[in-house]
Image (cartoon, rainbow, N blue to C red; front, side, top):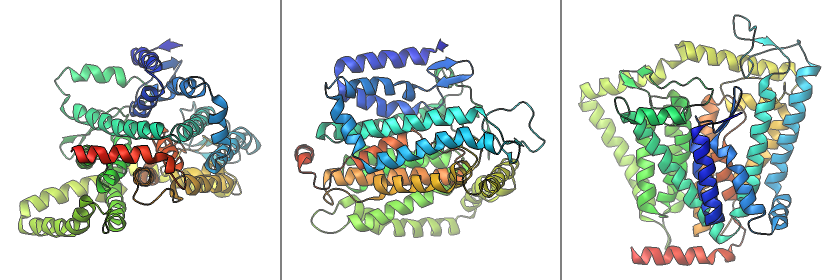
Length: 469
C-alpha cells in the first residue's frame, strides 16, 4: 500500500472540510470525481481514486457529524431508487461470483483487466476475472454515494451545496481541459504527472487531424468528452432555466467547444443529441410569466444559427473542406479504423455472451464491451437491466417538485446531465459503472420532494440574488 501525493492532498482537503463543516465536505466531494485519471492510494496495481477515497469523509460528516445517523439511513431505506440500485448491486455481486464459475470455459469473453494467455482476438474462456471484484466495489461506492447525496440534498442547504459542487466539477473539468490543451512546453506538464498516476493506459500525446487530443484529467479523450457531455446537459439546462445564468452559460459554451476540440468520436457524435435534449427543454421552459430569456433565445435562435452556419459553409468552400475533413477523420471514417473494429468485436462477443448465458449475464465485471447497453445485457442480463431501468425511472425520469421552481429547475438540470452521460456511455461505455458524477446528479434529482415547501429559503435567496444583480 502506498499513498500518492494526490492522496495526501485529498486527505488534507478532507480534514479541512471536516473542520469547516458538512457543507464544505459535500462541495469538495462533488468536485473530486473530476480526477478520473488519478490514484490517491495504491494497492499493488490497483488504485483508489480521490473521489472514492473522499466517500469516507462524506459518510463521517453526514452520519456522525450531524449526530443523527438514523435519519440519513431512514431516508435511504424509504427511497425506491435506493431499493432498485441495491437490487442491481446485489444481483451484480452474486452474478459476478457464480456465473463465471457455473459457466466456466463454456463461453468466450473479452475480459475486463489483463489476462495472461488471451487468444489472438483478445478473448479468453469464461472464468473469474479481476473485474468481478473491482466493478463490484465501484457499484457499491455508487450506491453509497447516491444514498448519501439523497439524504444531504433533502435539506435546503444541502441541496444548494450539492448544486454548487456540481458547478464546481464543471469548472474544474473545463479548467483541466484548457490546461491540457496549452500544457506542452509549460510547467503544467509536471502537474499532470501527479494527477495521471493511476494504472491506466493514458493517451495524452495522440494526434488526430493535425491536432493533439485533449484528455484533461482523464485517461483518454473519450473519457474527457463523455464526462463533458454531462456538464453540457447540467450547466446548459441551468442556463436555459435562468439559474446562475452567467456562470453556467460560460461553462456550457466552453464545454461544447472543448468536446469538439477533444477530437473524440463519441463526444462529437453525442453532442448533437445532447443539444437536442436542451432544445426540447427550451421548448417547455419558454413562455408564460416564469419563462426565461435564455430559453427564448435558444428556441428562436438555434434554427437561425443553424441556417447561418449552413449558408456560411456553402459559400466558403475552403472552410467547408476543413470542417468536412475534420468530421470525416473523427466520425465518418471511424467505423473502419482498427480501434472501431476492435470495439465492434467487443460488442459482438458481449451480445453473444448475453444469449449464451440464457439472458442472465456472465457476471458483473466479466465482459468488456463498447456500449453501456451491451455491457448491461452481457454482464447482468435481463434481471440487472430491469433493475437499472427501474432505478433510472424512479430517480432520474420521474417528475418531482413544483414546475419552474428552483428545486425543479436544478432537478431538471440533473436529469439532463444524467441523460447526456448515458448518451456518451451508449456510444463508447465499456462497463456498468457510470461514475460518481452520474450518481451525484441522480441523488440530487431524487431528493426533490413532491411539494417542496421546505425549499422556500432557496427560492428567497435566488430572488434576492436576481434583484441585487
